[in-house]
Length: 191
Image 1 (cartoon, one colour):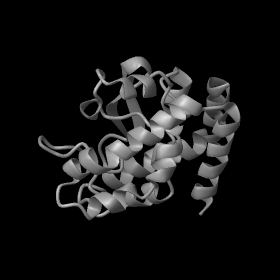
Image 2 (cartoon, one colour):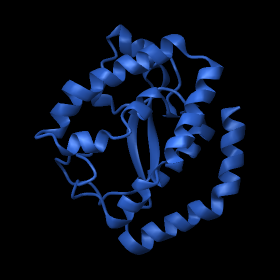
Image 3 (cartoon, one colour):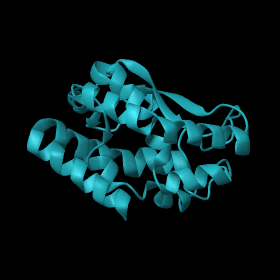
């Protein structure tokens, strides 16, 4: 069902996606898409796709965004992020089978411990574009912008809470619950 819905949405949204891509290229130059390795189902890495909202990374840049005041975010990127339009290319990840619409948000490999049973359980579920942790931490950028060390704050404070939420989701997920999460996400996006 995910693949069919993703294909339909991509066909409908293609003119908008192309327009966003051209806007990024015109305003910011460089690559249109941001690709980052994430941990997928059963710990298999994949490249998550998003519209690029930051300047190209330099050696030593954090892998976590230190909030909406992060100097790496472009003006175009701020606009895309405020409306979550940067997430649309993940429909291609759904089409490829790397992701689902609802599931645990895929994490950067350096934050995942594949030896821990909690992570193994969370990774037994296909990652999603949205999920309970994504909704609970939709203000993650604000939290990180207040931290002295965003990477450390993420690892020590946010990640354990996200893992607990995602573990609970993996252990108790239902189709009805997934639809509820989709509708809650749409409500958040509408403002």
